[in-house]
Image (cartoon, rainbow, N blue to C red; front, top):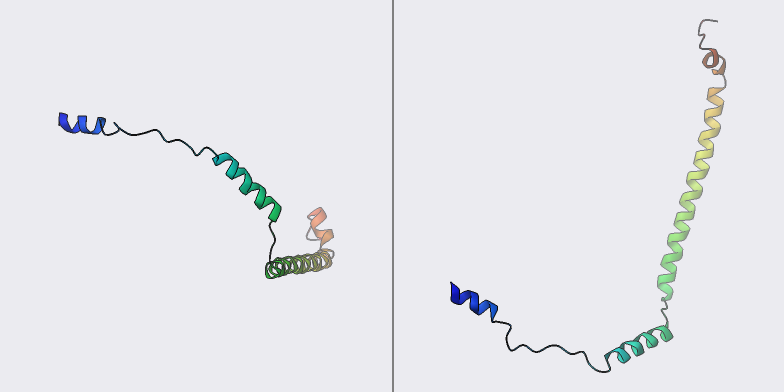
Amino acid sequence: MEAWKNKIMNSLEGMEEVQPPKDGLLKIKEKIKDQKSKGVTKEPSQWMAVAAVIVMLLCANVFVVSDYFKYQDNTEEVSTPYSGMISDFNIYD
């Protein structure tokens, strides 16, 4: 058992420390500069998909809002004949 522990503890002997490349930071900065100069452009098909999603959301919102106002108009018509009974809670007038 003692030999196993010693083997594990001594397994890191002889390893060398890792050193980064001398011009590594310069290469990274150059790659970032190249990417910024190229810019990110989307293909026309991607723009069409984005436009289609926006149009669908707008149509859905218009439908929901118009349906909401129709519902509000209907509830006002139904509730007006019973406003007298509900306001004073006297059902047998």
